[in-house]
Length: 195
Image (cartoon, rainbow, N blue to C red; front, side):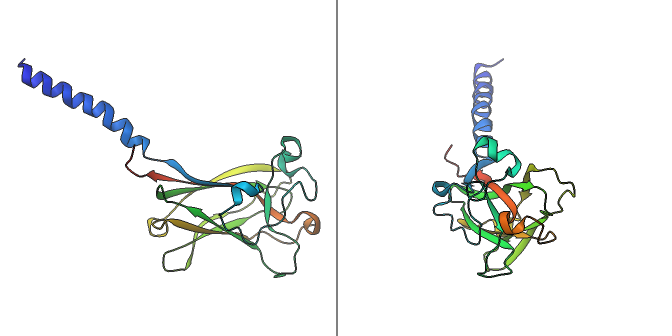
């Protein structure tokens, strides 16, 4: 085989060996994360409408958090300002790249913890991107919900998210504990081509 052809083939093979892993390394990276119930992590994410830090405030098991020392907050809780608010909002950042997937770790507990997730599109309208119907059992279990985002809502450098409780309310422990606990929210997507 001609040395030039062999050298060309080796160069192409080397390029593909380096380029393909680097290109894939820019895919599906963590763009932003907020650990709900951790004030340091919540800082700059503009949380609005969330309940107090739990189980620090009212005790309870919270799906094992009484044993692990983790914290969370609820989407809906006993308040008079406003009295019928069944949602909580926050902002995530996509400065490193284009958002593709939202991950939410939510507690499906004793109450009806069914919920919907909305994201605000660039024109300012809330778009429904996910709906979950809770398990009717009374077992407490943490579930990670993976939500694929429509391209039109994930283009900006920020992503505003609203979680709305749709389950039957209130349950017998609502006045103490509230309803629909969230542990953390992550935003995944494509990184900038700087790898």
